[in-house]
Image 1 (cartoon, chains in turn red, purple, green, blue):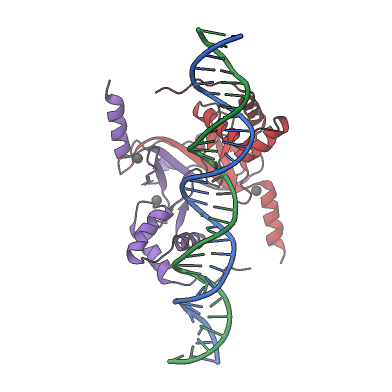
Image 2: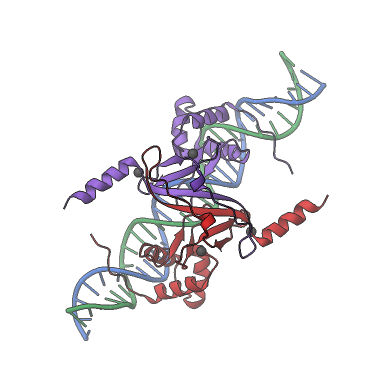
Length: 138
Length: 138
DNA sequence: TATGCTATTAATAACCATTATCAATAAGGA
DNA sequence: TCCTTATTGATAATGGTTATTAATAGCATA
Ligand SMILES: [Zn+2]
Ligand SMILES: [Zn+2]
Ligand SMILES: [Zn+2]
Ligand SMILES: [Zn+2]
């Protein structure tokens, strides 16, 4: 009925520490590469399993964004994200009054709406530069 | 260099017609089921291939969220979407002044932001009802 | 209408992120 | 220290999507 007791294993600790000091919103396999530096025998399944546990207990945020792979974030204060259309890199965007949306109480088909997410899209500096040099040559 | 000429095949036409008269934001395989009624020998690969072509030529919108199946929409006028947290059903939410976000010109790390997407989350009428009857019994 | 080029197809295999399985291990309360 | 069971590493399985390939069919041109 209620969820099992959560133990603090060495793997879980190292995963959480690494995610907390990475601000790149890494994918599971990027985090796997980082954690393996410290725990060479850790398995990718353990990364996925722990990200799931930590997400469900609210210690980590899973970014439900467009794109192929899921990304994770240990920064829990409310903020938005931008994603680069070319390379998929994700960065933070602070919340402002201009990026705040009023929740519609109910959609026309009777949905009860209780949350929303804003996702920005654009180009990171590197891809923007590359795009410029590709199109500038006549 | 430039994309090849787009031909109008029977399959492509039927796919587009069916998507245009479905307002349920179907997944590829849901659309596959619908199209097979008319073209029994169509293949799932053809559905995916055409949805990709039609998306890239702007005749169809692809709604992608990580972790869940992509959904497609032939309604091209600007609007938002709500997704049911339980069953994944997607419905339209009209754009209003309250759901309009001002684009930040640039993020702090130099991203050039040129678009955004608002996605609402909640419960569809069916799942909301089910949730009520599950939790109401003492 | 016939011809040629090639975009598109059906069928199928491959891909790849994520989950499930399972015997062995270890966290942590008693 | 002992016991329960959450967690692990290894590995197989899943499932949505993409790639491959020989055959077919749009469609521009003669
Ligand atoms: Zn980029
Ligand atoms: Zn973030
Ligand atoms: Zn629902
Ligand atoms: Zn829609």
